[in-house]
Image (cartoon, rainbow, N blue to C red; front, side):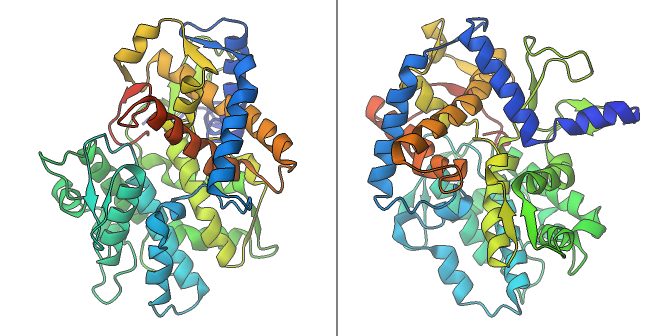
Length: 415
């Protein structure tokens, strides 16, 4: 691809940040409040009742308010048993860094496999429980990891290697996820393609991913640890920028600017700029979900993660569905709830941006009600406690199958 001018490259990279996500999302909210959006209205009168519903959900789930971060690790504990902790405790780690590399391997692979599963897919875990959706995807990926499905070393199952990831086929995932015509998992081919792209990208960047071991996703831990060698601290926004810079090229080709792939970034005509980023709206949902999920392995390895609220809320169907179901945002044409929508459509871009911005406002109201500040209740805990759980709860109250109010056509690489 033809390289852009340095100024254009700088503009492109400016979109690879949580700051850009938050800034443009709040611009979209301002447009909504001015009734200047094509598809959605905002009802600020519904914000406080929505926050109250979230607080009620938090108190149900975490009465002591000891809320963990929103991260992939929560899904490994479905049913009250922390499967990863049990598996890790049975393994002889050479040192804390070796465990951290394995946790990076697992988190990165599992998050990349964590897009919408669809309403019909189920997974029977090794203990016989039947799981679906994010929890089912998490346990299926963990079971594959435990069996060595992503390892190139028969003597070390608890790892993922670039060479193995680059050869993953759709049938491998279908077997691991128990997917079939009778048990369909949407976006299966897209997930396999994403893992192959991950393997190729890691192999092509040994300075980042193979500094202390053969090429593996966990090499990103060593890269980040090297950047924190003096202070043993890293900002969450810096973590995201590393994820976007070094893993961003794996995403399917969508928008690019000056030769820089923009990932989960879409167009909307109302967000104006007097430069090459005109009309571009970034989200980086899976990359931010991954960044949240890498915080705990860093902390356990002795690296503090600061400014966690530098990341944004996640614009996906549980958080976004919460605000539709509680009337904070509503469609100007209600019949659009009954049709399928492309992820890059103007309607979906508006909805996702509004979700990011409204999450910030809900977090402020939730903290006020609970008497906590942003340091003791960062957005990552509001999400977990929280808006994601509340979105699932209200969906079950309103629809027997618990489906989201808006249906998005997914290829397994966005939601």
